[in-house]
Amino acid sequence: MLSRPGGSADGARVYCFPHSGGSPGEYVRWATRLPGHQVRAVQTPGRGSRMDEEPFTGMEALVDSLVSQVAFEEPFVFFGHSLGALVAYETALALRERGLPEPRALLLSGTAAPHTLRARPSLRGLAGAELVAAIERVYGPVPAELHADPELRDLLLTGLRADLEIVSGYRHRPRPPLSCPVTVLGGRDDEEPLDDLGAWRAYTTGPFDLRVFPGDHFYFRECPDEFFAFLDGALTQSAARAVLGPGPVAAAHVLP
Image (tube, rainbow, N blue to C red; front, side, top):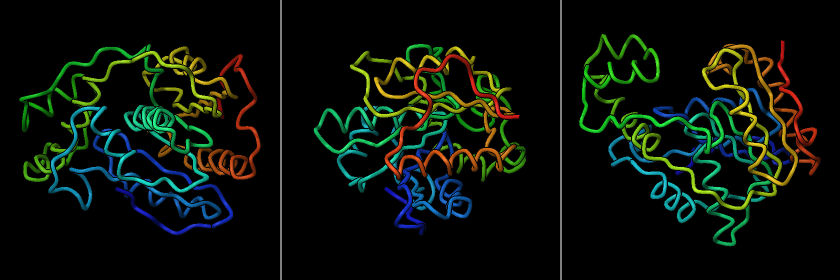
């Protein structure tokens, strides 16, 4: 379930959980910008080299598979973007519940705290152009090639439809907070309100930080230099067993 690029054995080991429809390959390539750390990406069925496998459509089954099949090598940090942030959080809880080693820190990107999430409509049963239109109404524009190439569209939409089913079916279940540091990241122009990003503060008894970058939902593609500089620093602190973040957040940190 993991893609494993190289990296320094002295740095942090970070497991990346992709966004809805995202390829683990994008996160594996982050290793070139984070040479001092070990970057690994979670690759679930229905995407990448596992395209022929049936994808998960529910959070519980996905997380159960992850904690059952993946031996996360200590010490480690989780990074998740959008849907991946929720999967990373739920995986951390599942590891705790099973008495297994937990992440040293969580870096959660591009999604509001679970209890603030808005309900999303199910896209079950939709396909082809009809599915694309529904996705754009709810989530915004999709890449142009999904309109131009029906064969590519149908191939890519298999995993995306399953991911969006996970999103629409996900329900917050109150549980005791984690104890590890939590850092939440987002784009200044994303649709997620800052208050909802900051609401992650209640999900840990440890240090908390909120960082806001220029850009929209995929801010890390728009301002990669600022993003990777911050991420490198956060991972370096984690590897050195230092505290991630300044403690309870009073205001968002917005990078120029």
